[in-house]
Image (tube, rainbow, N blue to C red; front, side, top):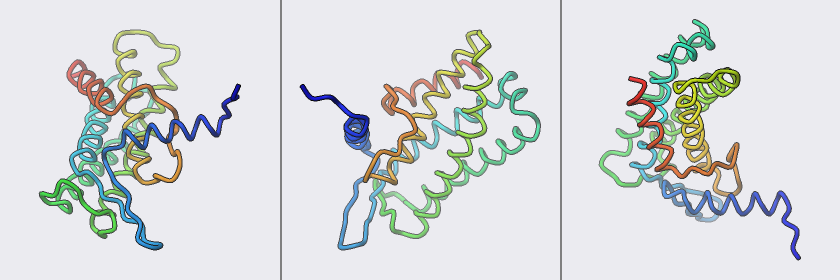
Length: 190
């Protein structure tokens, strides 16, 4: 009987993640690699993460745990993410997909990735770390939404590295479920 190794498991989950990534296709021409990004998917993921971040810092236990300096930094990151999404949509125009090798698309997408990494560091880490000893429906919803946002961040990062797994964790959520959980969180916390 075959004994699955960690590497085999990661290869399998990488294949599943890659298969679920309708957000891009990879083409190779010699040493040049071009990623064709699905504009709607990137915007959907980014917008859901933006909604999560904007809602989360408005929750008292999150903002208290973050502190004034980090809330100010998070506000700047949220503004940057919003600008990055707008720049990405502008660079993509009305296209359904756009080549990542275009400089303006690359810059806008890299800006989105940078900002979602900061959301992960500032807000998601605060919720998952602080909320460990707290219990309430708001905390539970915030933790669920943080997990959903982390899934979308992992998917955005995985778009850029189709050669191997870049996911920080293996999540049972698919992208549509994650977006839905964040929408519920934002609606209930408003």
